[in-house]
Length: 189
Image 1 (cartoon, one colour):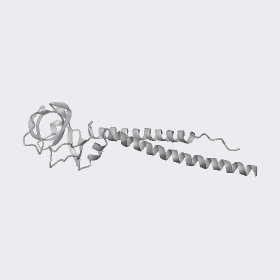
Image 2 (image 1 turned 90 degrees about the vertical axis):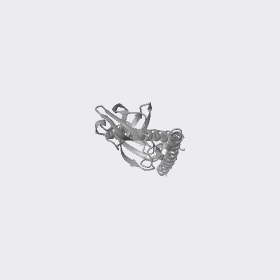
Image 3 (image 1 turned 90 degrees about the horizontal axis):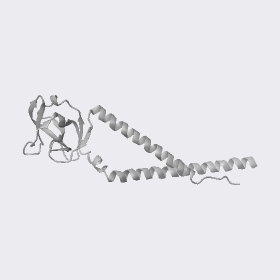
């Protein structure tokens, strides 16, 4: 008499492992992102340059690292990230061109590649932070990971992990069956 096996058991074990792996990966990602935000003191610690307004200092697809800054410490020449005063949903990276006022801090900005200073004044409430580091060209990776491509990539990764787990679980299951049969044969003999 052969042992009865549940054909779905390896698939269920694989699904459980994949779900646990996904949960752990999400947890690690959230801890990392929130930790980085805490360390740099800003909601946007990493940003990708998307225009040539700061060329040659910053190029399209450069990754910039932004840290929180006390606006009163900023000076002419500093590169800052701020919300566009005319469209607060847009973030801009430009250099401080002129300090209009120290109390309260008010600045005029200009892109290095622009012919004229920006038409607006940047007050402290619009400032996100100061550019601390530039990592050339690597910003293409986060740009590629934006929707819809990130959904496809995540789906492919989950599918591959699932298939690997299922095949691994099936191998284990077959080994267990063979061991069971060999043990029972030894008892009968």
